[in-house]
Amino acid sequence: MRSRAMLLAVALAALALATSTIPAPAIDLADIVKVFGIGYAVSRFGPQINSAINTLLAQRGVEWEGTTKVVPIISIGTGTFIGAAQVAGPPELVQTVKAVAQGEIKVGNFEGRVMIPIGTTNVRRGIRRVEGVGLSALVDLRI
Amino acid sequence: MRRYYVLTALVVAVLTAAAGCLAVTFSSRARTVNGVAVGEVTADGSVPIQVRVPGAGLSVGERAAIIAQRLNSIPNLKPADITAGRVRGEWAVLARGHLIATAESAAAAQAGTSARGLALSWRNQLRAALVPGGTVSPPPVGGGPAFVQTAQKVVPILSVGTGLRVGAALVAGSSDQVAKVKAVAQVEGEFGRTARIRALVPVSTEDVIRNIRRVPGTAVIAVGDIRL
Image 1 (cartoon, chains in turn cyan, purple):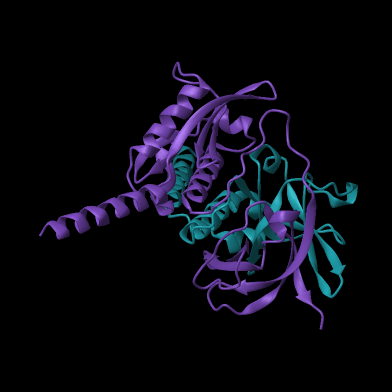
Image 2: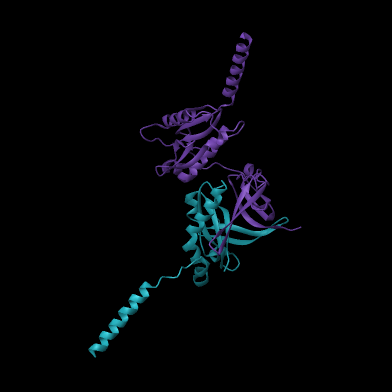
């Protein structure tokens, strides 16, 4: 009986040792989006994407004067997360932006998608624009 | 021989006078605007930098004087010489790599921006002041944000890589700034293998391959197409 318990303990220790040495697979944005969804992926990778966009613009000499942030895009119609966008503006206003609400717009011959920076991720409770914050980049996620 | 000496002296005098006319001289003054003490750095009637926060035992007027003195100490300054960067961990505006003014957090907060934003704003204002005929408007002081008339405009989206029209954008901002917007430059990039980045920059020219110049105070609010 004692030898069995000893054997089990040794086996468990060996398993723990073996699994601890297996290198963790690199988890990238695509995996996170597939498993956890766009909302979580943006919260996880948002700062890195934001930095990548700012670097891209700085290389062209057209960086934003102010604070920038990457937030999810939410469809006004369905309330689902459909992408990501970078918003820019004064720091105290950008801090309050939680998402960009996307809806349809038609102005004369122009038809497109209006992007509204908002302070909530629940568009069903109503949409209140965060004034003074603009859209600076779109992030298309290929899944 | 004597004639040559006179001619040479005349040419030198003319060149010196011309250089004096072209060079921008910075000066400073201390004012009180809406009850707020402000140190201003001036250049040929424009005000590229306003100092609103005293520091290091210096008043705002004294700080403005030092900034003007530093700018004047560098000969033949050109707009491209003015840059923004970090000096000892703090954002600052520099001229040919020499420190001109530090954008402290307190000053940035008062201006409603970040330290980086303030440094970039000063850089742009100084660059404009160094352009002959360039205009610089001083930022509002005290009293909160000023009333601004806004406007919207539909312009083409131009790919920076190819110059092709890839859509249309609705831009918004103050009326005078929106009037300057001719297109939206689309700067493309990748983040890993999953995310495609499309940065949208309102610009004042349709020649986005050679020259991208952002129109400040404007932003894209909608993207789409023009129905024909």
